Image 1: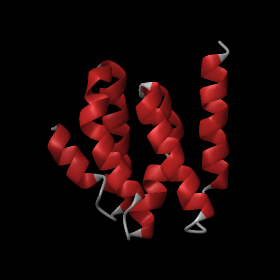
Image 2: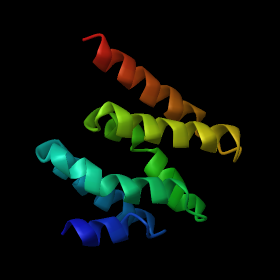
Image 3: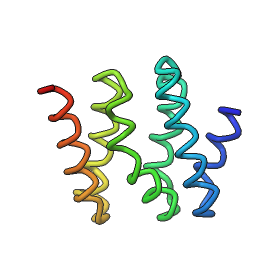
Image 4: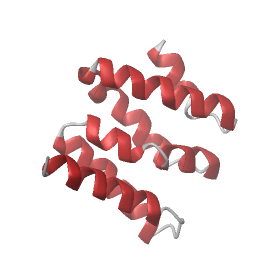
Length: 108
């Protein structure tokens, strides 16, 4: 199902996209090794020309970062920062949430 869910999170239809994100996050919690295979899809979503796809993905980055090894998590945070600073997308709250989640995780 993973390839199909990866296709659906790139779909602008919000209900199916949201459900697919939830299922993939659940899958990653159970199978952390799948992060490397899924990361390119998430990064692709953050680069999408479809605003709804980007914002749906932005909404899960804070959870996703915690499931990633540090290098991959850093790539997600960098992409989120670029969205906020270069594309002038209003994703600052999500960026702050992701950084706070990482900080809490580090100091636990």
